[in-house]
Image (tube, helix red, strand yellow):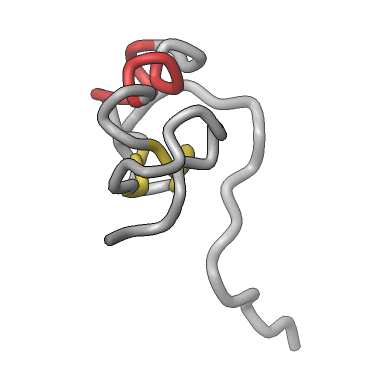
Length: 66
């Protein structure tokens, strides 16, 4: 059995992580609350990996500056 639902309503249900179109984790959900969590995001965030964002996207490891 997976972790408990992070929404807190479905403690006995199997959970999994949902991701945006770029592979960024959006949350840990179960089947009962997945639609509710996804509804908090713009549709293009879920489907278009080139969606607009005003936040800088940083690399996993910063480049070394000489």
